[in-house]
Length: 214
Image 1 (tube, one colour):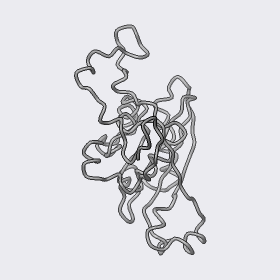
Image 2 (cartoon, rainbow, N blue to C red):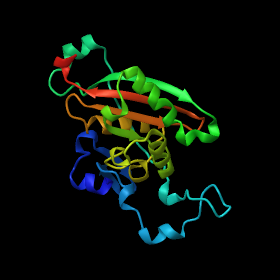
Image 3 (tube, helix red, strand yellow):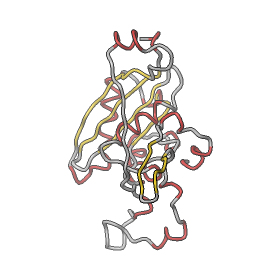
Image 4 (cartoon, rainbow, N blue to C red):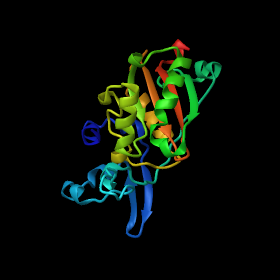
């Protein structure tokens, strides 16, 4: 998914090029790098990272990598958005948000706890959500939450997740939200969710609007 998205230049509006100083000089970074480093022939040889009993399924191949990254978002009230948000400056409105927690050992499925709360606060049903973005710390996170929530997995991370794009801790929440916003059309709803290792998760429902709709 990520390879196809990059081939179509779908991430261009999300990314600000950064100049990085290296030993051999400066380099401009303007594209994700991790998704091109996959070596398919090595995938079957990787050992489970957690469960060593022989039943483990989580390996480095279906886990996100740690990456450098930074994100920035501007959040404003309705009055400021109307005053300064003409053109494409307003991306969406925050319809609702929520936090929830479960037993820390079950942290991968914490999004399934918080998402129904965020949807209820937004006053919408799951079928009204056009695109879902969930932080893909592990592939199992997406599979498990999709099953619990009964959500079509094709609607989750349509442009790829953190396994391909990387998990820049401290930035990933903003990253998935920005990626979500760039997939919605006017009037459409999107839902973003991210879990943490302590058993908690944060969810948010947004709707694509412009300044005139506020």
